[in-house]
Image 1: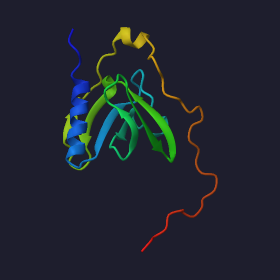
Image 2: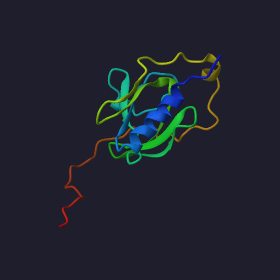
Image 3: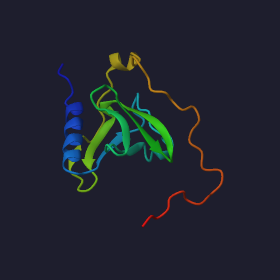
Image 4: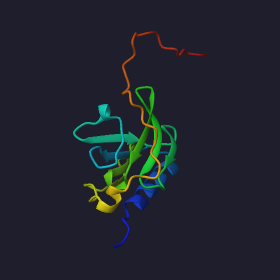
Length: 141
C-alpha cells in the first residue's frame, strides 16, 4: 500500500501560500480520531484554523499527527491534527488551495498505537474574562 499524498499536499499548499503573502487556513474534521482542537470553536463538526506563521507557534507539518500551538480566546492551546482529518488547506485571500472533500479512512494499526509524545493538554477550558475592562492597547502617534 502506498503512502497518502495528503501530508505532502498540505505542506506544499502551506508553503505556497506563505511564500505568496497569503494566509493559509486548514479545514479540519474535529471528530476524526486523534484530533485535538478547542471544541468551543467547532461548528458542524468542523473547524477552520489559521496556520500562518504569525498565528501559530512550533508548527510541525512533517510529523504525523501535525502539531502547533495557537491562542484561542487569548489562551494558549496545543493543537494536534492527523493529516487524514484535514478536509482542505487554502489561502484565505483567494480560496486557492486543495479541498480533499472527505477524511481519509483511519488505519486501525495507527489508531491503536498511542503517539510517542502527546502535547500538554489544558484540563480547564478557556473561561470568559471575569470583568470587562479597558483595552491595554493605545494609539501612539
